[in-house]
Amino acid sequence: MPPKKNKQNEKPEEPVIQQPVIQQPPLPPPPQPKKVGKKAKKIVEYDSEHEEVEEVNNGNNDNINNNPDFKSQFETMLKINKPEDDLDCKVDIPDNYRCDFKKIKEGSLLYRPARIVVLDKNINTSNSKVRNQDLHKNGLEADWNLGHDLIYKQCWTPDQYRKVEKVSTSQLAHKLKEEVGDCICKVEFTKNPDISEMATLIRNGSQLIENSGVSEAEKIKMYKKLYERSQKGEYRIMRGYIVRGEDMQLEQTDIGMIKFLDADLLAKGEMAERLVNVKNINSLTFKLVKYQLK
Image 1 (cartoon, rainbow, N blue to C red):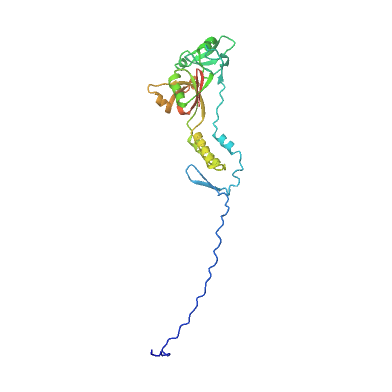
Image 2 (tube, helix red, strand yellow):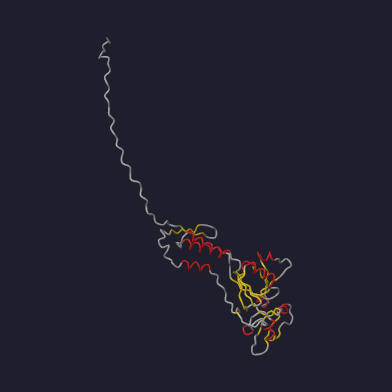
């Protein structure tokens, strides 16, 4: 038989403590997406030394589309003003004529091939007073009366043309190099841009584009136009002659500068030699044809 247990030596049973059940709070509902307005844009203006001058907060730009005329403003900003040319005219003359005397004006330039400028046009008599520019430059007797018939049949003028032809930049450069020769011609071109004017144009144009409210793709198109416009300076019209040198190659003419003798300045006794970038030429007129860039 098993021995009897001594109740005095037995340890009392420890009471069982029940842990309270902690209920987890319900999870909060997932956050709902908030409708956010257009982000505020900050426009920071800088001076020429790149120091911050002014910061403008446009808020929600709620009025970003309140300027429906921004495209017109942008196109106006890109526009290059072309000066008036009172001597430029289209003519209808016989094949054996070189110019229309009725449309010759005081200040018109003629080419016989001598370099001649009209001093006094007298349509009521048979001749007009002209000056040989080369002789005048050398201090020689240069003024004489030139008969109208001689002007009609032997004198070109860069201010008249019978037709217009569209050409590429390289075609126009080829004509300058190979076809113009010593004939007087007219070139219309844009000067190289002034750096300060270029910077102002880019700054103002960029602000207009960013505040236009158009799509990103449309903005890129506008920025391309702005860049192309920033590469062009003042529009010029110059009449005169190509100054040629032995090193004047067609390849160089296509990509670089040509020397040009401004006949109007030459007639005034002023320094007349100028440099023209071939890529900036928009049109060339000589021997009754105006060649315009495509």
